[in-house]
Image (cartoon, rainbow, N blue to C red; front, top):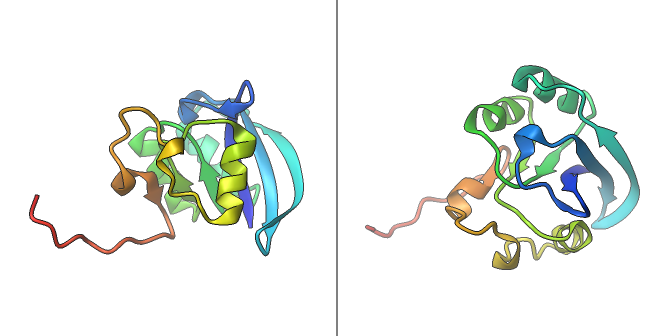
Length: 130
């Protein structure tokens, strides 16, 4: 699985739409196999989504992301985990261990889990009436 995390100063970049750097990590059986840096060249959302899809990414972990760009990435088959903040190494370790749904990594003011996971991941609807 190829996982990309938008980076800025050793942390998850707060806004994916303008992020220029990604840490790309290849993970197999929950263990890191390799890592590399990817520079995002495209500014246009459609071209950006195509560039990222051409890298064979399975998952993107990021901070805030616009709905149009998120929809383009999902349409390219990329799972988007948004509204995440924190140190890149800690976020990556939590993702690899499966303990990723940890509110320590939620952006302040994040609307919650409904918004955080898009793409190949599905959630059941809650039976609550609120």
